[in-house]
Image 1 (cartoon, rainbow, N blue to C red):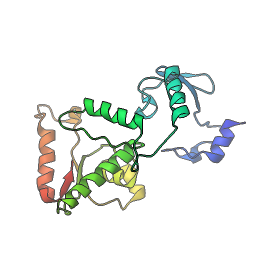
Image 2: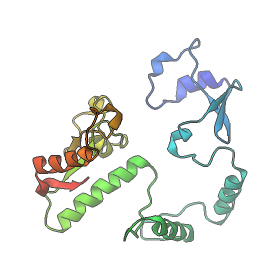
Image 3: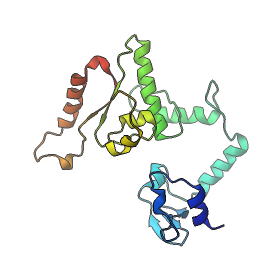
Image 4: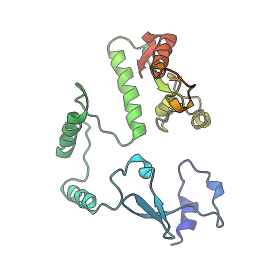
Length: 212
């Protein structure tokens, strides 16, 4: 199989201009990984500074992880948490609850960061609606902050260029200045970034803000 040809024909890459790939401009194909490094189909080695997509933090090629996954598939490959529980979900929820601060002790499992943001938006809005405060629907986020690619997450995302192709966005996303202190004027109080959140909430109306 000619992977380049098949990829150009069948695979739609994320955040990519597919027209830029042709026989003279190859699609980068990552074929394997080992530890902190990945290798393309030509054998070139790269330091995986992005951890795939922030989700391979323990490194690539971990045989022990493969063995654990195989054992779990043999026992139970998948079962939904829709009205059911299963042992690994219960055990992991308890472990996460041990690590979270304060009285945070409930865990809602999802598939991705975008879905986590969507769930957080929905939970916050539904909570206020259940309390008789359905007008609290706005989500305060930061300018230049990335929260995901689904429609709700895009509303929270503070990167205009990522949102324009899909506008109009879900209403309710409002943005305070970013916390990149190296872009600040010299001598700015570090609490300035927190104050911007407070000022934005007051500007929008506290009675309309569901979550930060």
